[in-house]
Image 1 (cartoon, rainbow, N blue to C red):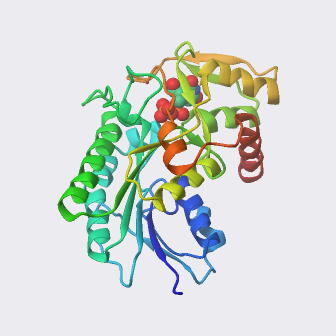
Image 2: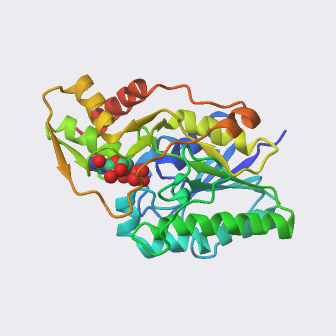
Image 3: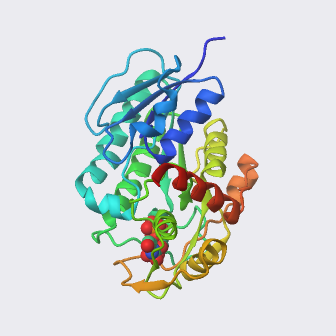
Length: 313
Ligand code: UDP
């Protein structure tokens, strides 16, 4: 039987590169496409010699062609940390809009299944808690985060329009805060920041009073959920994330306790429109995909800390 081919945009990014690994490990051919503005070739260097892996440097916001058959298109290209997307506001909007169209077109022409990375950010600063897929969200349409939130909301709309018009098989995963090896240490998110600060004996920076909450999912659990969705019969949107919720202060204290009880905490201003609470309701993923996260935060942070210590020291 000939191998199935998957095209992964953002394939050299944090999540995209873990997806490349999963598909190569499961006997697929992988075409990774990335413009490397926030991704890195280091993330896929170990796949370079593999005959089933191909890398194309390309901004997917611009139209492009790929030769040969493609069975699955996975759209994971986008700056994803608040610091990154605010540094690349126009590129973020374009990859969510034009980029999504270009990949939907490739999926349409190739008769491929299309799956896109959406985000818990589409719920904005949520008034429904935990967030269930049927909740429409509370997003500031023109605030500093809107370039990401609204681009992803638009991308979801585009994907479902293609499903309705062309009867395509599209799937949408709403990803909640995910962490693990290959995050960029300076991407500004709370997990790499705290790890960087621990490794460099710096105080941990808590924004606001630290009472805002997040729920952190280890990358292997996320990849398991996404690949189950891809190979399932449903379109979603489906929340994939770890429902164990922490205040940011609790999270800082958990890291201090484990790695350096003497580390200080310093408080910095809360960024504008920072969501006050976030926790996925994962009933749909449990029921339809038989999925739930398995890696406890302490274990996942340990694995991530080891990776950062090895790769950044
Ligand atoms: N945060 C923090 N200290 C940091 C970085 C982030 O307290 O050094 C907070 C941030 O204000 C937010 C939460 O941690 O409330 C998660 O932020 P992150 O940038 O990781 O992702 P977000 O969920 O906001 O997209």
